[in-house]
Length: 109
Image (cartoon, rainbow, N blue to C red; front, top):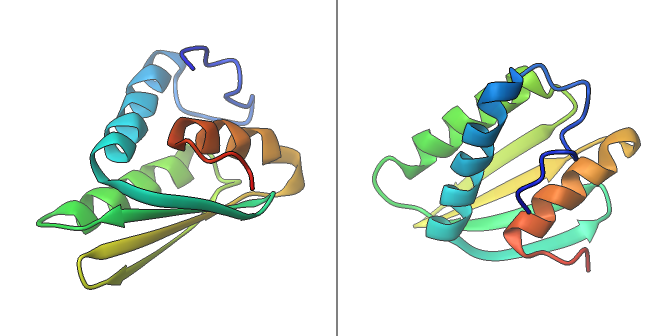
């Protein structure tokens, strides 16, 4: 999914920086994702392997993402060497969560 057409108009991240942010998400998901689920259409859960500096990296990404896309709600829970990242959106931004879920390989079920 290289097309950034799913990025909502409400996103304040400059257009030229959007591919870089998507690449950050892709790197995190390809390196750390162990499982994912979609318990609700407006909620995505990503389970990530931890490690030195990973929690800080995820928190930094969450903070920057919230700064440009305020419709996201992120909750990060650390347990052992596992991180649980819960991502929620409002109804108006379900398609954005769908796109992120697709990048993570979650099929919505």
